[in-house]
Every structure is written in C-alpha cells, then in structure tokens.
Amino acid sequence: MRSQLAILLALSLNLTGCSSLSFRKEPPVPAILSGSNEEIREKLIQEIPIGSSRADAERVIRSLGLEPQPESNLDTGKPLILCSYSGRKGLTGQNTWLIQIDCPDGQVTDIFCEQIGTE
Image 1 (tube, rainbow, N blue to C red):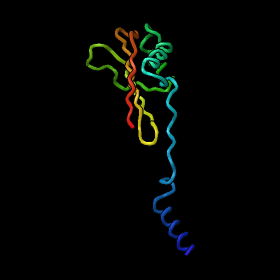
Image 2: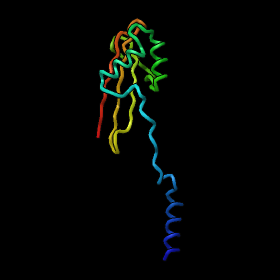
Image 3: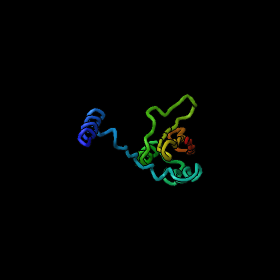
Image 4: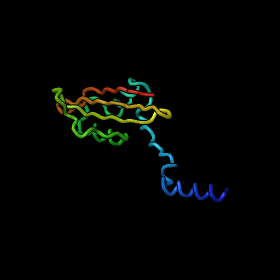
C-alpha cells in the first residue's frame, strides 16, 4: 500500500511539476507608498520638490522603485509623468497606487497620489 502511494505521489509530481507546489513571493512595496494618499504626496514632494525638472523627477521616480508609464503625455493639454504600482493585499486582495506628476513647461508643479484597493 505504501509503495503504491509513493508511486502515485511520484507520478503526480512528475506530471504537475514541483513548481506548482511552491508559492511565489511578491516583491516588497516601495517604502514611499506607505501611508495615506496625502502622506504619500508629501513624501513624494520631499523627494521631488515643486520646481524640479521633468528629467530629475523621472530619475527620482525610478530610484524609488517606480517606473513611469512609457507614454506619459496624454491629451490633457499638460505634460504628465504617470506611474502605477500594484501589490498584494492579504491573500486575495490587491492595492494599486496611481501617481501623477504635473510637468507643464518641463517643471514639476504638483503631485497627486490615489490608492485603489480590492479584497
């Protein structure tokens, strides 16, 4: 009986693969994204002061573990840097942070952050 169980277990591991039994570890959420929307905004403004150049803002965003979306100039009439970051929340939920950095004339004029969470 034990040998049949061992054979069955070996066959199932061979067919499904050991990787299906392991859990994927999510990367940690960047520290800058902790807190309320207003707290995150204030932290971002400390890192990217109003009046900074667009190039400096993009460099800092990358150094904070975020990635600007490829095409950040939308049809809004003013150039933007847009970023989003998604991370797990509990077992089945997810948090998404949306960040918008306004850069008309190549200078940072304001920063917005919005968190969207699902459980």
